Length: 143
Image 1: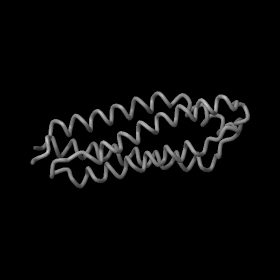
Image 2: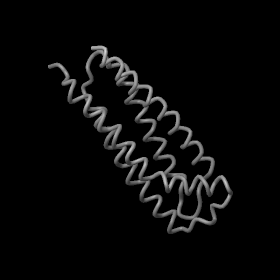
Image 3: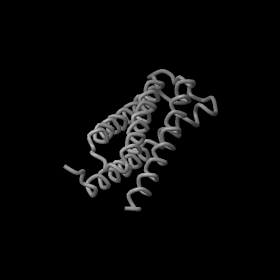
Image 4: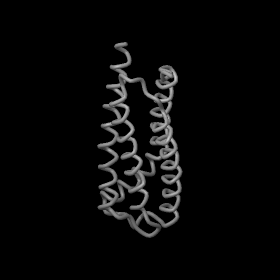
């Protein structure tokens, strides 16, 4: 049975859109931590704030995990099989970066080195995801 191209493209589009939406919801909390770390004022963040941020990040990461599972079950058209695998690996790495960032935020403190490393992992993965999506789009539109 051939993969359904319309379903595949729509599902990838939905995943990318949902990922961006979740990221936008979490961004203000991320910025709060990033600013506190950069200004060396992490003690200005209360334990309650950190706990709330952890819950928000955990919920977002759970949604990312679900989307990652969905990506792994998709049947891509043969022409994009290789780039789909790169997209799948990049998304898995992105989720891992989110999990690592979540682990860097404890109720009493933030592990700056771990937070920075997780942020870098997410940035690299985001670039790879964007590249994969662009490449898939180019290949599928040439059809």
